[in-house]
Length: 136
Image 1: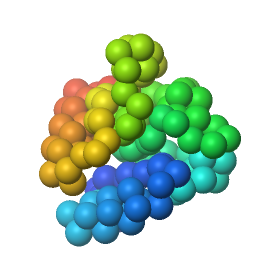
Image 2: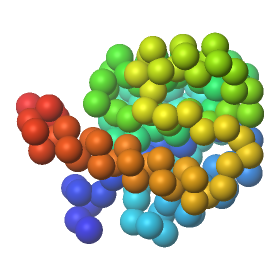
Image 3: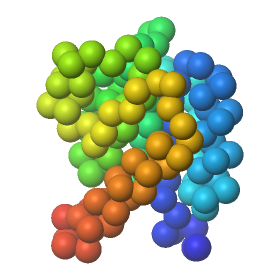
């Protein structure tokens, strides 16, 4: 895979163990991954760099997941956002989908579950680019 065609993933979760588990799992699959436990740092990063897929927790200190995903979608509408949370309610799920979230994964999750969701998001994104909806 060339550097250009690598899918770029940003992971944001204030629990370091989540980043420690997901980052190497996705790197092993050939993705380019940046992981953050601090939402303010992640917010700065998404202002500098577009990501293909963003995986974010909802409940965090400082900038919460809803604010973060809103900022990501405003800057880069084609970025697919996947929400992971241990506080899943119908209300937060509904609000997330209204803001353009691709999918919602409840904690605790298996790596295989989140990998499947990322693959689906990647397929959707590639299909969108193939039909000319990508940048241009």
